[in-house]
Length: 125
Image: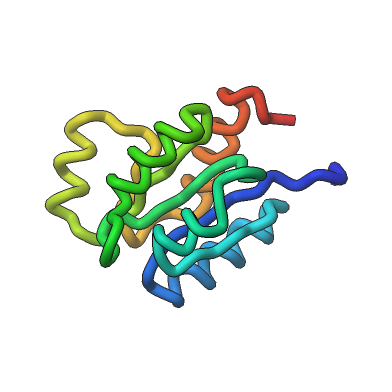
C-alpha cells in the first residue's frame, strides 16, 4: 500500500450513513473525513481533499449548493452527489450525471466510480 492515502470527505446529516460510508471507504484504503453538515465542511476547509461525497437533501446548505461552492473554490475536486429522494434521482439521471448515486446504492459501484474520478483527475496510482 502507498504511504499517502487519498482523502475523501463525506457530508451527510444521517449519522448511520456517515458511519457506513466511512467503513466502506476505509476498507478500500481511503482516509475519510466525515461531516454532518455542509457548514461543518466549509468551516474545516477544502484543502487536502481528493474527492467529496455529499448528500443532496440536508438542512442549511444542500448538496447542490455545496457542489456549486466547491466548484468555485476547487473546480478540480470531484464531487459525488447522493440522495434518497427518488424524484430528484430521476431528474439527475436524465442528465446522465455519472457522479450521482441514489440511496441505497451499491458500495462496489461507488468505489469503482471514485477510482475512475481520481484517475481522471490525475490522482490515480
